[in-house]
Length: 57
Image (cartoon, rainbow, N blue to C red; front, side, top):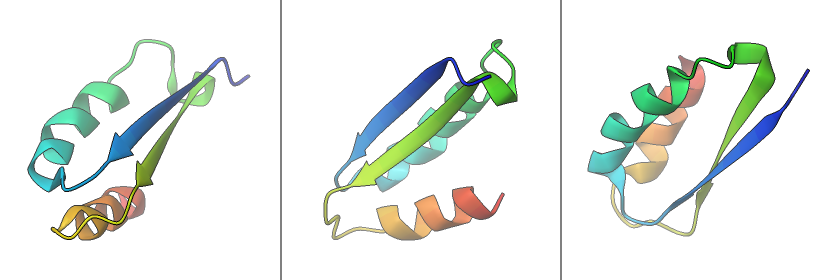
């Protein structure tokens, strides 16, 4: 059962995604209890590529 939605706004935050994602993925709730939603607001750096890689993991 989904208990929590985590929304992460992203704008030119590519280098920080690599630090943020492991922390969010390591929650103690259990993988089926939460979702992570990244919202990219037109980044001009490599944020979109990093998020695509993360989604494929």
